[in-house]
Structures are given as structure tokens and as C-alpha cells.
Length: 338
Image 1 (cartoon, one colour):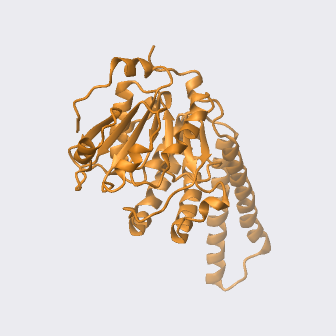
Image 2 (cartoon, rainbow, N blue to C red; image 1 turned 30 degrees about the vertical axis):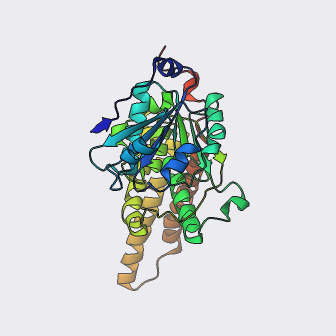
Image 3 (cartoon, rainbow, N blue to C red; image 1 turned 90 degrees about the vertical axis):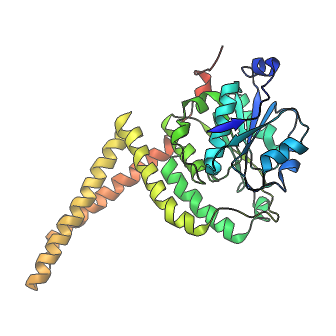
């Protein structure tokens, strides 16, 4: 549940909400030191700013109410701590309710430059994308300020996310500086999206299942004295399982439930051949090892050949998956509101 500051958007803002209006959602938890400077940097292109106090122990929501005079700012209070994903979803729900067409998610720790917002939302406003993300890996110069440990971790997570989400062309899928069009946001099951740091990957997975177009915008992250709440142990414990479940669900949705194509045949055939080759070869290897006799060459070939063909089919299925990225933005044929 959430409590919302009693200050409703004006009628002018609501009317503008169906005409290229932009809102920003800022999850707020232990960012009291940075939140005011972040808010002051948000330009006039943004009509509404939702600061989501996720049961912040520093009282960041009250702090913003007391010290920020920007009339665009509305504070949303979560009664319990929902995590960064849950806080973002609370802001998304409020923006959808108020009728904003483009919703930007911006962190409150000062690592994301609000000046990039116009570039981030441009592909959406131009009808070229449904969802955009910042990309910190576009230029080598942009990586100079990134700690080496974080750079390595993000690179590994980025590759795994490509596999689980299906957005193979995304270079920085774990980046949390994002923007989404109302039509795509309205199709997402917000209650099912992961509440923790995995929510960024979870959103990509769900966007792929609705065939939303995703694009990246070059950006430079700013790393100062802020402390990240994401712990390596937590990532190693939770993320592999979640990536695997999203990958299996995506394959099931896209290749068997909603469609059955050449990739579906290649996946099934390839897996069956590989499994057959391994089981057949393993059984005969064990049988002959017990007898103390060498495995006949013909038997070895009968085991190896299905594995080779199966692996080739699986590689072809991966290549098809890479080429099957969504190309037609949902917003071109799906509109919300009048």
C-alpha cells in the first residue's frame, strides 16, 4: 500500500498527459544527501516528478516536502519497504493513473545526469521505441570513472541479461536510467515484476514477451561517495536462478505458446539430438569399460554425430533469436486514452 501526498495534478497537466507529457519517477531510499541536487537538475521538459519514499529511514520524503519548492514534485510514501523495484512500480502506477505518456525512471543518488532526459525520451517521442535505456559502455571515455570491479560485474551481468531477456543488441541492460511509453507500461504486469535490483532485467524480459522495441542512449555515469545497496553475495545467490527462470519462460512464450517457427523446431531437435548422443555414448562407454573392451569406432560415431548436429541446430536457433528483435514499436498501433 502507499500513501500519496495530497496534491493532485492540475487539470492542465492531466490534459497534457495524453499529448506527449513526461513524468519522472525517483525511488528514494538513503539518498537524502543527493536528492535535492537531483531534483534541481530536472529540466522543464518534465511536467511531473514522483519521489517515492520507500520507507526511507532518513525520512527522505518528508525532507523533500520540507525543502523542495518545485510544484512538479509529488511525494509517494510506501507504508513498507518494497525495494527499489517495488518503489519504481509504485511511481509507475501513479504516473499511469495520472495519464502521463512517457515515464522516466531516475535514481536519486546523483549517478544519473538529468540533463540526459531529453535525449533519453527522444526515440519514444519520435515513435521509434517503446523503452529506452542509458548506455554507459558506448564510449571508452565514459568508462574512465567506473570502478573496475563494478565494470567487470556489469559486463558479466549484461551478457547474462542478453540471454535471459532476448535483447541481444543491448550493451548495458543493467542500467537503471530508463524511459517507457505509456502503451508499453500499461501492458506490463507491475505486480509481478521483481521488487529488488533484478527488476531492471525482469522488465526487459516482460517487454520482450509483449514485443516492445528497446533502444539505448549513450550516457556517462557519475560515481562519487554514494554507497551501493547491491551486494555481490546477494547477486550470486539470487540472480542465476532468476535469469534461468526468465530465460525458460521467454523461450516458452515466444517459441511455443505464442508462435511455433523454425527456431522452435531447431530448439527441440537440437536438444533431443544432444541428449540422445550423450546418453547413448555414456551408456556404451560405461558398458565397454565394465567389460574392459574398447568402445567400437562405429558406436562412438553414433554418439558423436547427433551431438554435433544438435549443437549446430542450437547455434542456428540462437542466431535466429538474435535476429528476431522487435522492430515495430507498440505505440504506433496501441494508444491509451482519447
